[in-house]
Image (cartoon, rainbow, N blue to C red; front, top):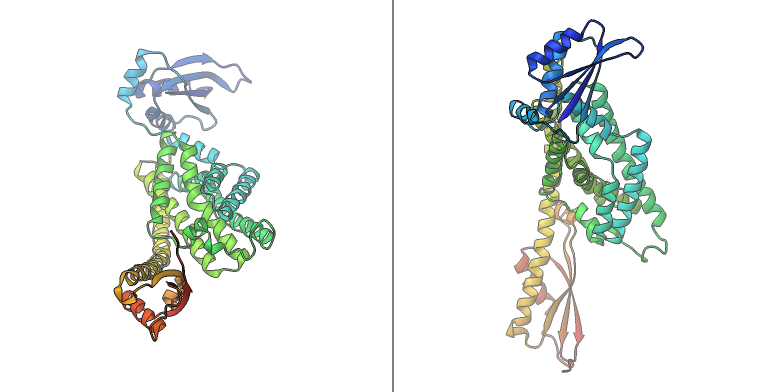
Length: 428
């Protein structure tokens, strides 16, 4: 339930009471004596779904814009009449006015926002370098990214340019701050005793996950956007949804920053693309769902303007996502190709170990150097094969060429193969 309290200016009391009667809600009137500006305080207990219709009727009836209207959530309402009101005003979404207020509250003051974002990024960067999923998820609880992501969309739908502009600015500057923070931390840590000598960020699984994203990564962003709108509209679970939105944005932004610190353009491009696709997808789903939920500007003459703004933003977002998805699709295809080559090599080496032709030899993959960029630049995969043989056993003539031909036939790719022969004795 909600308690709507209207501070009624002099001369408007009959208007408010008639509107309450016409809407079919209960009310109580209290005399107002403060400074003489208001003649009464009208309290109206209503279900959440009745708040917007009641406030709209008050505006349509001509309630003075100088009146205060306060909407508060009631913890408990003890009355049989409440059930009757819930049946009359069925629905779960909050009012347009509450939506605007909650969206504004979720986007904190700039100083608070950037402090929390820097702290969250610092923790996430440490989690990436430590390959600790738990640390990364812990950092997401601190990240304040849900508010700006949703307030921008709410502002467009209800025709609040200030709210929309602030949401966009906070998102853009927030992502830039996250990237710069991670880059500075990476630059400070690189080459110190806190990281192993020759540390390569591309070998860390948590980082590699953000540099080889697949199209399936879109589901996280789209799902986060949907969940964000549902939590906002129904006033539930905003903390957990905020974690999901932060997971989609902060770790890849931190990864892009680490790519800058370590001078890896591929890391910057792939992780940066993932950040952009995620933030655009969250905004797209939020815009569409809020409009489909029935939210409109309170002034009817502004609905067409809001719809035009919505339509133009949706088109821009879809085009941008489509273009960036080509990059994401290219990364997905390249990652599949490199994984397929490595899998085929491993499978063929196992088959060669079991092949009587090679008698006592045992084949093991030592390393495969085949990166994403090689798929598109025509780079040749480089394979190192470790071969175990009994002491004194001689390899067949042109042994390395034979191994290379077998592996090339299995992968369908030209390979550069190095064979390392090791005399092995086994006991027990």
